[in-house]
Image (cartoon, rainbow, N blue to C red; front, side):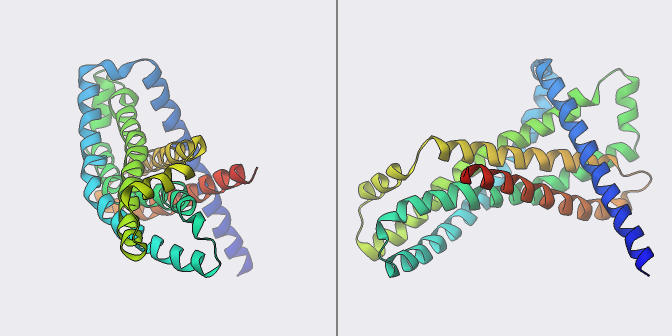
Length: 262
């Protein structure tokens, strides 16, 4: 039984490594297409703006709703916790760090994953099963320029933009709580937050969701391309993709956490 367990564990590790290697190859192909200025092709630009609409624009309502709820909850618990220890002056700093460094990138990446990632897996799988990718190659249309690069670029655009929206809305939700409980003016609240913001805040709020959403795009494309014969494979690939994306998100989070400690 132990041999069987080790065998299954080994196959799982090898499958995961293969997934990550193929996802990395997809990112390299998309990056090469971007630096060849393929974006200026009219057909490619059309695909990119379509992906931005489905990935970023259609995720805004869910982002705003999540930001209002989470922002209010975070501020409520922060005030209770910091007031108990006599550290009320650190409220602004903690609001900025929690919303823009930690919760914002993770929540926005998960929204993009569930709203757009599943669609990418389905679309790419459908193109694979219907031999549309072979047709593109036959017509000398490179999939990395017409398909991979617009999707990865749209996800990379959506991550930081949604995180900024999340941060602004969640801080607004925080002001509703602070202003109500502590009779704080909006101008004073802005000063409180401005004092807590620095270049590192914007660096993390930009690059962390950028990397996470690029990981989502590459994994979803890879899972869509791994569908071989039937569309019934899509739910299995979706679940596998979800697990691999969460694994990459944890790695990226650890990297930024270690960088913050250094």
